[in-house]
Length: 68
Image 1: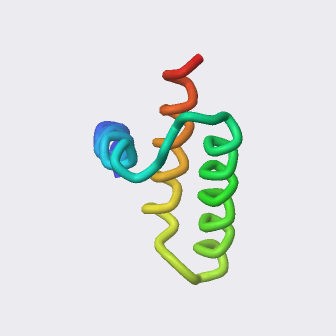
Image 2: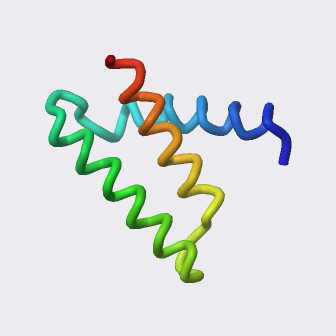
């Protein structure tokens, strides 16, 4: 997996998430972030797609950075 592939996947996921989450409150942001971390934990146990979950977490982090 190349760095370009990873960055493109994060950007695409970041755009997709705009339609999924309300980003009006900091608590909502934290809830989304923690949810993604939990899904990564499940994927590490074999219950999910680790690559997909890591990309989703990275996209959430990008969104949070954009709002600083």
